[in-house]
Image 1 (cartoon, one colour):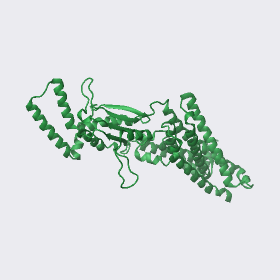
Image 2: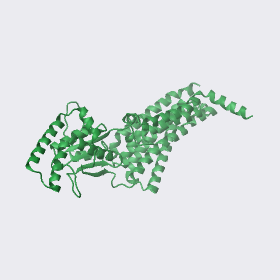
Image 3: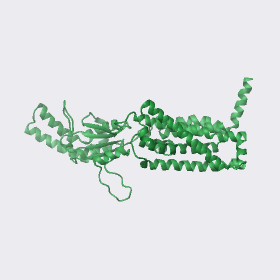
Image 4: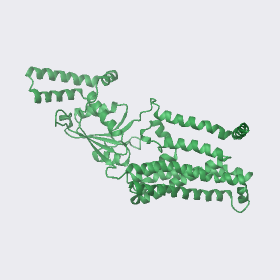
Length: 431
């Protein structure tokens, strides 16, 4: 008897070939995504974009900037990128660099102050050099620490002559001055060291990098320019990230009522009346949009009540992003339901696509910590655009008009997916 039950279940599963295939494709696909993100491939370390403002313009500061530009883990910008060919934009200033960090263009900006070249290093108890100011976005907890470490490394590898000169200065201060012959000999060695530094090639640079390590010789004064006065700002990020993922599941499950109605014959009777397929799908789209928006609202109200998220002061931005996100996920669910023939197919396909989109779109893991290729792939998901929009609202306090890019993409995705769903649904009209 048990054998017959198992045999019957296997026959039913074999008949639904799509569900059978997805049952095995889903775990393999999901494993492959996490293997690419965390598997330690060559592209596994994302590059950090950083703005450098050199207010000193000394030999030491220019050497330091060149050292930072040689770091493979950094993408250094000293001036904004021009959108038109041939146009030359002025270098960043402290004010424009801070504005770029606040806008989310980069997570870190370094300001090299005037006087850095005269006293670049910190040495001895209570001593300090001309500290470099680091402006950072506190939503990215990794970038400031990595930039600080790479800054120390760049100072050691790119400023050997300046460090030697400062070292001799402190030598004279702490243990007494040098004799005239020693000073003359030291000056000659420093000049030779500067010439060697100016003419060294890539192989010499690589060899130096393997010998020298950063030791905190550059003083860094960090200041968070985004999120420093917020209460539990990361909770709003995760409310949006997790919320969007479950909205996708809710929308696909609710849209599956189409399949239930088709199986029971209800759909055929509805279409035989004055209700057209377009009106039927549009009505379900509106219902699923309102359902998804209500679910998202409840989640943020819970975050406000329990985790003290600043919700009501961001109501306009939340309403715009919430409705656009709900519309996009509702259309996504309608498209999946129209493409599938059974509930089993819908369950397997929706799980595969939603978990994949959530993994690379930032719902499970912040996108800025992913490899650059995965970050770009995430832009093809609803999750990434929705999370970016909610981040602008709750983290950066940007006005509604600054959400135009995310709103445009989500609305366009929703319209395209609904049109696709309507076209696929013609099979029920022809049946």
